Length: 81
Image 1: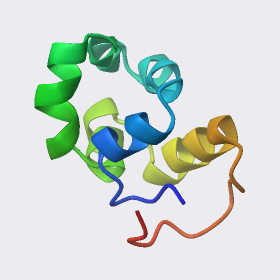
Image 2: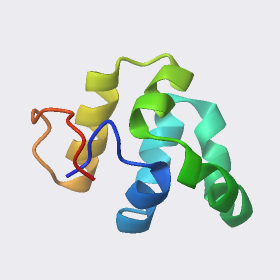
Image 3: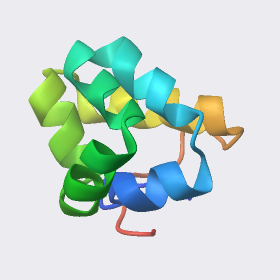
Image 4: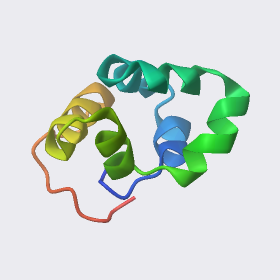
């Protein structure tokens, strides 16, 4: 389950296609398409931090990522990974 505490590394390892969803929310995240950048940045950034960096409400980003991954969009953010 994608949560606020999920790292981008874990997220993109499980769902590599979600890099496009992240890039849709903020152009900066398009850099995660590059394997080197992903390896350096993704382990250190959580979904909650990504939402803050993009200036997007956390609930909105979580819902979008969950929908794109085929998960229920309305589940709590929690600390599940």
